Image 1 (tube, helix red, strand yellow):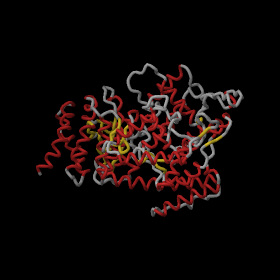
Image 2 (cartoon, rainbow, N blue to C red):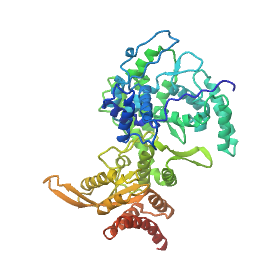
Image 3 (cartoon, rainbow, N blue to C red):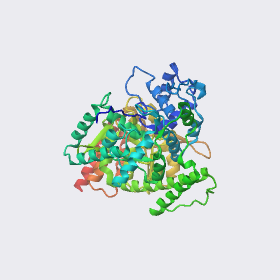
Image 4 (cartoon, rainbow, N blue to C red):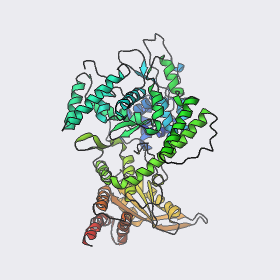
Length: 583
């Protein structure tokens, strides 16, 4: 094709995980920078984000406010704060900022978003934002919504193939580079042509590279944007819940198919700029705001649950108003997601090799891992999301080990998206993972910190969490152990856990009680080896082997110093499976 190629970009590199917007906006709304996020306050807000553990800058950047500007941009794009109002030359009208609202102040829609504490209600807010036509169509009048456009393409693809799935390379080449000025059928033709030629290729990675290079001949910027923007755009499209991850591509969510059809019916809009921004900042309408559509969406969810033999009860919902109908639908969507998570949990024992590969990526500091030299079948750990992915992969490892008596969503203390990927880390004041077994409870804490500050950051909270778990889970009936996982174990951290002393208060008498806690610090590399051996040696009762390893690690801690104890724990992991081979 000879036309100039443009790539739309709905995300930004400073905020690769849009699911974290809520906690960032909450921090911003409660800060003195609400309505005052320019100049020196950019660097101050960035420091606030860093101290709250929301961002994890690497190295010493010369620009100490770049993250803050990117977060501000994201807040504005979603309509959660009033963005700087651009001037539209084509409209011939000069608007003042106050015609929209005070610059950088949390909007009415932002306040609504902050009140949305459930994943379903937050998804709906994101969906309202993504449905707004706020992106220019190159060389044409009017604006478009990338989400609505992609849904139109995916639905047409589904009509012609039976599946709405767009692989990563298909999205990179013909999703993000097109818009409503293109003919939908011609776009699908190009996708299917690419798919057919790629299927015949024996060197798919080389094929993808050459295809991108060819299309990039008509792209005025760096060709690496095809991949970088593509991954980020798909991440942002997924946050509304209508599309979800499949492999490294996307597919329309079965539970949101009807909503996808409604949204795809109009991707293009001719709307005055000020009107568009007002809609964005006050909460754009969705098809589900219409009573007939809301009832249809609810009935479709009922049918989906019945089809999958999932029982439900809506007797507590009156269904008299559109709001109540939508709340009932969200209730069913939550039941659907919980059932899918239970199935996901059961399947983790079959996914142990992928879990191990995720551990390898975390050990390498993030990146991608592909299978069969095919970038569409790989896995990814964003470098900026390493802490969240470490918690998540340890959760998956616990599910794979099995024998849990608590549900998978009770094990974790962090949120996951519809595609079961992590959206954030566990909140403060609690442990990361609570693995409850019939004969013991194991509280797992993880950290990416490895410097001398590791002990200062983790020593007190980890001991406090294990002490609290003794009361909640142990109750004098079964032991509670702590498992501390990090890439590297600082000597002072090992020394703190070797002693394992904590003074708790009796809830009735308020007297101090001295506790001796069992907390075993293990390098991620050692745990990765232990986890892999559980499966390669076909260990039946895997959790019993984990408990054995913890108890062996604790046995000699009183006669060893911290460096010796740390080394012995690594040796125990190796010798445990050596003894299994000898027996």
